[in-house]
Length: 442
Image 1: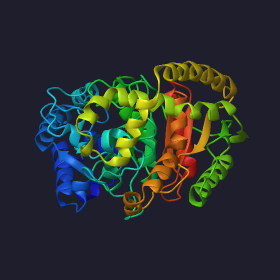
Image 2: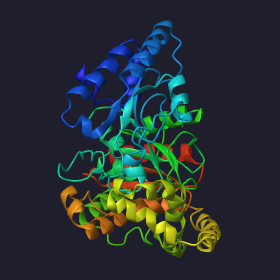
Image 3: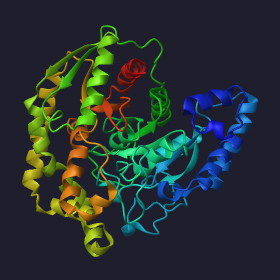
Image 4: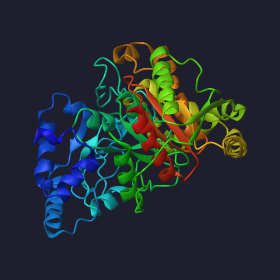
């Protein structure tokens, strides 16, 4: 049954539909793989075996009766440990929330379960989701698929590791400044950042309500499309016949190409060449409004995060990893006047961006300008942690600040992704483009 572990969620769903895989056997295969894996405790905060088996049994009955709810009915997924699951500890990677056990499922987990998706368990994450590196000495730092001594990216670190190491076909994470896309890129996965407000965050431990989003991490664009369909209760994007012929892309030069290190630059340039060879037109452009929007980020993210968590944090600050504590506390110094002014200006900048990129099908950037940093050095060198964390999230934050939907794809260069940024609420169109890019990148 180990042969099932490397297959996409969609492929497993097709095998269930064809009667070739029993959902209970599939669930047991993943639970057994988790139990046997030497790094499982660094990836999963906890498994939900009884729940998984119960959901799988129901899926077997539907499969035998020919009444499967959808293409992923009976397929297992992992969930980041900031999604509430009834009766299961949900601690969001923080000792501040140790022993927190919700009474109900997060709205998306409840909906996914009613659609037959099997919850394997909850995956480790950066503390309260406030870092892009994936380093968490408070609970666990998951491994990176390409570099054993490096961090995996965060904050959906265990989500990415669960898929990359074959311990889940796909995972659900959250993304406030890059938390789906950085770990997806650093573990050679596909990751979708949805538009703010597209998917419910009810029952998800918050970081910044006005930026928090939810999205899948998977091995294929098809999986992301099917999972989005389940989570949004809408028809999946039609990926059939997707092509780059006559597609027009813009490469954002402003901010996104600054200080680009060699491997990410090579991966990005190689991806652009293959896309052009597949028929795409690609033009570089500048966008000064992006630089201005990024300068506003400190007045937007940290004050909201501290407003949500400040009282809890200050009651027991010694329980937190100091660099994460420092990031939260930075929000205390931002005045209400600065916060409101930043939001008003950002709304204007978003309109300027929309007008500038209206002629492109999507905008392209390297997902992260750096490779996964060394975990030991991050622990020992505070300045290095700060600089690498800012760089790790710099490019991904562009999509959050501008209110976009974004898809990251592996380039073939290890731990280097390319991101397609699309207009708000245009996920299905972006996924169709992504399917064409996926084929071009091979």
